[in-house]
Amino acid sequence: MKKAKPELTLAKIGGNIIDDPIALQQALTAFSQLKGAKILVHGGGKEASKIAEALNLETQMVDGRRITDQPMLDVVVMTYAGLINKRIVAQLSALECPAFGFSGADGNLIQSEKRTVQDIDFGFVGDIRHINTPQLLSLLSTKAVPVFCAITHDGKGLLLNTNADTIAAELGIALSDAYSVKIIYCFEKQGVLINTNDESSLIPILTTSKYRDLLAIGAIYSGMIPKLDNCFSALTKGVDRVIIGNLSTLENQNAICTIIQL
Amino acid sequence: MKKAKPELTLAKIGGNIIDDPIALQQALTAFSQLKGAKILVHGGGKEASKIAEALNLETQMVDGRRITDQPMLDVVVMTYAGLINKRIVAQLSALECPAFGFSGADGNLIQSEKRTVQDIDFGFVGDIRHINTPQLLSLLSTKAVPVFCAITHDGKGLLLNTNADTIAAELGIALSDAYSVKIIYCFEKQGVLINTNDESSLIPILTTSKYRDLLAIGAIYSGMIPKLDNCFSALTKGVDRVIIGNLSTLENQNAICTIIQL
Image (cartoon, rainbow over all chains, first blue to last red; front, side):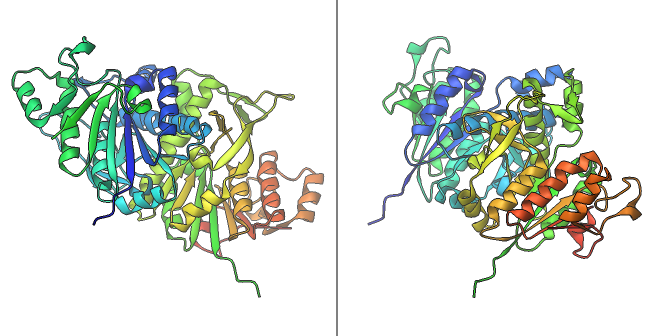
């Protein structure tokens, strides 16, 4: 009989939590109390845009996605890997959680490739190509709690901006041979909603076929589609459990949320 | 007979190297080729002041030392732990060096205490109180190469600005039970000079008594005194070898430099 794999929880906290000090403290307190191996992945929030604005840099957006030119890359690296990551690490450390803040460049943990220009030049944006799983397993074996910001590197010295949801999914996939992985995508809503303004329209279980049906009738908010694609990709490639919900999913296993299922 | 301790090199690179991309690349190439266990500590350079200026923050200096108020702390954390640290880590990673960028908050590696106000309120400046030696040894045992920026934390969630020379000295002292530690303080001069504008006035060996004599006649440039105090403190508390020199000390064991001796 195969030995049961140890459990690992991968929590991703989004921008709205990062931007709200009280919500952030609540999320980190709950995260610090999770049992077993764990990893935190955090998005950027509004701070990068605020700093870019203060520096008189223009934030260029195409279809709701940030274009990362060189000055904006510097701002994003400073904000995500510096200010936000180290604040989170210091707060977790105060909660007796042995947190280590990482970008993908640290220990070559997440290598990506600069996105090639097709219709839109997104600039210094990286698509993940390789996770350094042995190094990550070695860190986890020392009880370290990795805290990843949304910065990766190309292995040739270039830092790149990478979607935090995708980082969470790819880390989960890479670790799924060694661990039974649960990913919690934590944001401001209770889960996936049919009507984004109505929490009662929550979908408790979203299966592949239901997702396909909802996509076909245009019932999925466009901003949710990349997140959900990440969820299904993670489950397809070995992650055991993926849920989407608000802060209470970190605090309570039975919290209302959306469970993603193949 | 006591077993010989393994060797560890602790290199500290200063602001002038950080500010010059060619010198930085040269320093990192040399550092990546050093044999045995190693740690890099880096200062901040002028980037923090430039960013503070762009953000219209006033850099307050008293006796040549920066006053770190809250907005300046944010800038320093962003710049040191974000921009500079991650650039260095990405460059080292490209040189096949398994670098991990850390602040003192990461893994609670360096805990400090906010300096109490006496004559001058330096603001969010931390004096080192504790190095998490077991955690650091555990990282080094996995062949990780820690890269420290000059940010520590108080263990209660507060990040603090800390002198990089002192960080190098304290790390060296903490590791001196397990390793034979050599510290290389690397800056723009060939070593300690009697006349800061004349490289031929270099002191090849600076002993405690010679240092005392030179201090007595005011022959040591005031900016060098804290650095030298750190050097002597490190040697007194277990570090094997301390040298001060320029980039070539990283490249060549016989480079011209100042050797500090008790």
